[in-house]
Length: 267
Image (cartoon, rainbow, N blue to C red):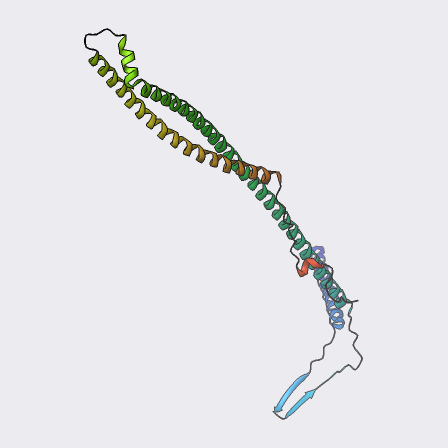
């Protein structure tokens, strides 16, 4: 019996708690509904193309205050961003121009060094050619001197043979030779002198031909030496005088001319 009563009391408590919970939930929902802003809808009913019926329920005539603080802040941020972009662009352009100028100066320096190296190589080549030409001209002069000496000796020998070939000299030279036939001795002496004279004459002609060739070669060698000396002197002068450096003009653009001139700015 006691258990039955306890059970009924427990069921009653459960129903009571449920009722209280439902009431609290209903009150909360009612408060939320009252807090919601009532919006007024304007319905437009088109009766015909010429008549339009508008049923306004609530129209507020109070002036609406529009805040421009956010718009001004946005415009200011946009202006600052534009200025920063233009300044960055101007700085980048200036840096590019400076790099271009440095590259131009490096190219000019490399060109000068290359030209200097070419001139030095050309000067060394001309010096070598001049040394060879001078040595050749000196050798030709030595050969000419020897040729002239041989020519002088041959001419002297030819004059001597001519003198010995006279009949008086032949007879005098053969008179000391004892022979039963002196005519044959004199004839033999005369023929020997004639043969020797012919050989000396041939050698003299050859020597004179060589002398003429040597003189022509020496003239050409001297001309070559003179030209090479002039070239060497010219190369030496060119190496002493450094080539003038052409100034590299910086490229001026509207951006790097005045990076801060961004037109009229809003105050």
